[in-house]
Amino acid sequence: MARKGRATISRYGERVKAGICYTCGKRKVVPGKRRCQHCIDAARKKSAEKREAWREQGVCVHCGKKRQAGFVRCQKCLDTHRRHIVNVKTAIFDAYGGAWCACCGEDTREFLTVDHIDGGGLRHRRELARTRDGREGQIAGTSFYLWLKRNNFPPGYQVLCWNCNFAKGAFGICPHQRPKT
Image 1 (tube, rainbow, N blue to C red):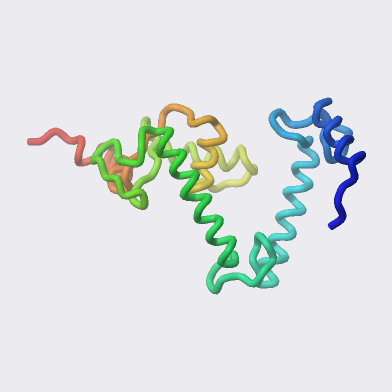
Image 2 (spheres, one colour):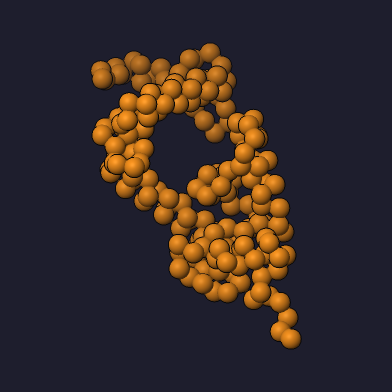
């Protein structure tokens, strides 16, 4: 790939300072971004098409190299993705009181998740999916954690272990919280 000349880099910098999309130079940028919504959507579409082509070719959907058997990524991209997930979960747990269950005290990270304190988690995640891409479904796991991070860790969430979270959702209360009889 050819290097961009100083004039091109300067032109991009001027566009960014002026609040104009650095890609097309025609429209205002999305707040907090350097591109307009049109260019963001076009880049997402192009990236999705490239990933789909790589998926069909049987290569890593992120770098195009030979993928790991049984996965859509190569070993290097798998390792990078796993580290990213650990870092995101660490940031989430830190923001919501630490890496232990607020109910029973479980501190094994693999057993921990984020709970909507007032309930309604499924409904909320479905709503987020609709606002994100207009389709039915829900966001969960890392996608939900990234949403929390992008939204500056909004209040109303806590760290629970999967057992306490399931019991709270299925029975309305975790057995640890029931009065002893």
